[in-house]
Amino acid sequence: MFSTNLSKLIPSFLNFSKKLLVARWRSLVLLLIGVYLPLQIFGLLAVEVWKNQGGFPWDVPILLAVHSTAQPQLDVIAVTLALFGKIEIVLPVVCVIALVLLIQKRWRSLTYLLTTEIGSAIINGTAKQFMHRVRPHLWEWESLVSEPSFSFPSAHSMATMTLVAVLVILTWGSVWCWVVSITGSLFVLGIAWTRLYLGVHFPSDILAGWMVSIGWAIGVSLIIRPHLTKDTIVSKTPPAEETTLLPEETQLIGEE
Image (cartoon, rainbow, N blue to C red; front, side):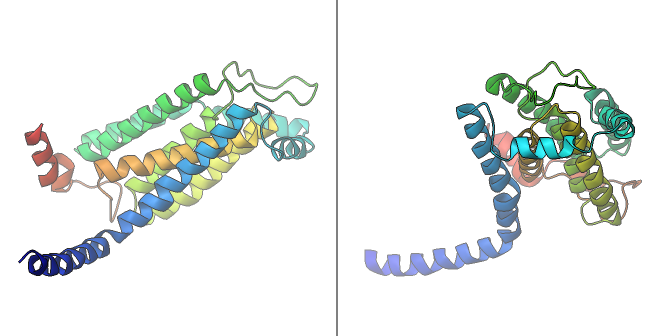
């Protein structure tokens, strides 16, 4: 009897598993590539920095190569562009986006935006205090900016990458996604260049900031599941899931 039941249960289970994995394969791939791999890279960088405060063999050569292009005109560009990566600039931009989402009653998207941005700031501050990595001092000339905090990971890189990643996710599937992806990538790379040019970060600081930001933004999206705009960022009527809980979310609340 037992063997008979088992022979029926196993095929039934395998059939269910196959259908479930086929239905969720995109989420699984996204979890692997978008969350696990970035966080794995960040973890490897963090471990190495913790063991060796001097950084990686490629940190100094890259910094010196970027510094070799220094000239007065680039100094002005670097200092000006770096301002756009500061929290004083990023925060108002986030607030404007949050206000737009609030007015549109896109509460799920708004929750995702705030959770991701606040979480990113907490991660950055915690990691800096935990790692205590000093900033690079590789040449005699004074840095054009004052950066009193620790180096790992780069706050500028995390703030800009988190903002761009959030906007890409919120506009996924629309023409705006391409606009955000292209302009956002240029913006993120530009800010990264300023950190190297000004000599206030190692390349590994920037890479670590990018990786943890991507992993965090995508990971939160898999949990909160923000609305993915299809046609335009601005829409008069938000979809139902923006203002109401999904059935499984309602069930989880009821079970608590």
